[in-house]
Length: 303
Image (cartoon, rainbow, N blue to C red; front, side, top):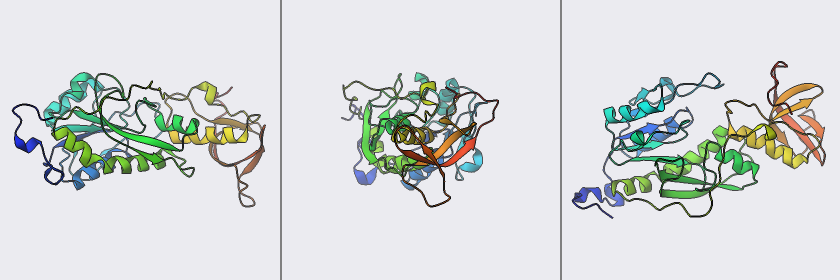
């Protein structure tokens, strides 16, 4: 529904969606550049990408200026409370967020003229929180949702503007691999989502079913117990690796011949000769294909 007094140009058809100034709020090199490219391909301008300072315990790198295509400024505020001022300074029509590591204050969410939207890789209200795909793998899901929703005062609770579902194939084993599929689906929904923003549509409230929280994995899931079922351990390894970085806890940690390893890749099928290490589990065999040795002084992840 169009707001009273709104000009006719704010109710575009699919063919005449106006070019918008859209800020991108994303902290990882896997998320921000694809979003910038997808928006620009649709004819929109991205004046700024708002990232996040690298935490001291972050093992990888956060978004840097060399990760971005030419054109957008890169802003790295010290705290989330500064995001609102940055958005007011750049005066975008809208802002899109994906994977930002902190909850944004209400002043930032309401700063763009048309509001701020977030892409969440789940079928909301299921798997709200920072680790939705990891929990989907842990729970044996064979597909995941991708949802564009308005941002509000709470986390992952806003009204839905576009959603779809995509397969969660067994061959997806990393955050980057899962993320690329999510972003492909999210990018295909951008025109629909932006048309609804320009029309000033509120979106659909999230379903009334009980939501679930997908927080970081905890110590009870960090250590591999070789007496468990091989399929359970295989799922545990895949879930941790798709979840990506954990700010405080490495996992999954396994002891093999007295050495502690962080497992990276396993298989339930016997690999070619001289490939991997076979482990007899409580039920069935598992082959470890890739692992990183841990510092003996680091006892995190021990049972």
